[in-house]
Image (cartoon, rainbow, N blue to C red; front, top):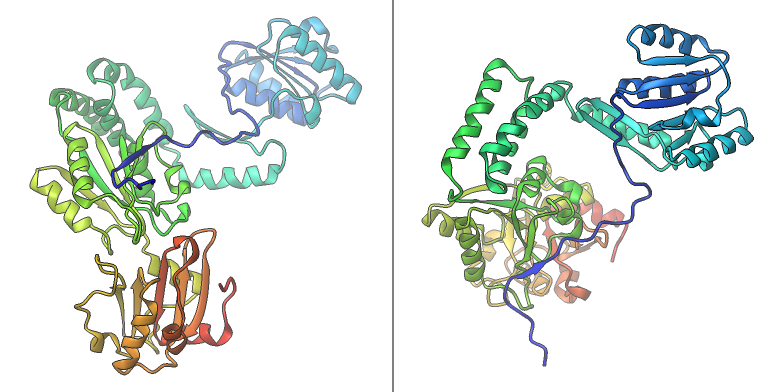
Length: 483
């Protein structure tokens, strides 16, 4: 007989998904590049190569005005060497890269064949089948350079992605990157691999997105290296309780993503989606500490002990919880245990399932004409049924919106109790199955129907039950994606 384990179980990170292309970055500083053609398209490629530090040999008999202007500016700096003649096969020998704006497929095929014979990566402009590589959209914060490719499928989408990244990366990031290059050797020499180095670089990165570096920042970086070096490898680790939201990785906060990227170990709940875990640092160890109603689950004492052990080893631990860690989780017990042993702990809030349900329904939980308050109530006790100490008279308040978490097996009993204590059977009810996930399903009914139906979901999907007048319009119009 198979017995499900109640112990934490380590999981390997998911393997890399298939790539349409391999993103690589060429170091062209001082190297020879060949550009064939005097068109505006060839001029743009030549300018890119020169900006990357290449010495660009240009082969063309005539040049457009754009190219002529570029050549006048670049010639004095030695960036371009002009050859006013057609290209020949030997021109590609010893080149690091070769670009051609071919007049027809015949010239394109000849150029690609010559490049392959010379062992030179080649690109024929606007003729994908003659290209060994493509140029992507570029975000330039050099020495930080971001390239975006859609493998030729949707260049306009690539440009749109570039514009979005441009808004996220401040121009002064260049100065911080140069400062990082200046202190890298000192960091490598003074700080041990692993936690000390990562602690320094994460503090560095946090500052790099705030403002351009000032003189005191430059001095402070050197002091931080020495400060971390003086703590020694035995410094205690930290634990961060992170809200993973209801499932969709796009619900994560930026702070949550930074915590996942900084973690040495991630202890995650059963309901945390693979998409969320995919945002974690790939080197981080991942340990499933699943807790699900009606299933074999890790004991809370074991989870507490594991967090404490890892933190004492100096690890940066992320306790990744579905939804918001401070709502119907064991966050209070975990925080108390860690604080009792002097372990530093931080909390990153997450989007709770009730908020995700309200967003999916397009309904305000505190609509000013229909609800004066909103309440989150557990629909499941540690013994499996409804909690025995709920104040049903207070919960039957028609002016409030009440959200019952984990109510799949107790929904009928909840409805009967509320009706018994005065809430009218016609009160609107919204039910969300697997909210915030691809398989999400939402229905709207009334309290009388909830009292008469079995809501236990197939496959154990989490169930959220919303009760109150704010769901009235949804009950009248019906819902898309209804189960």
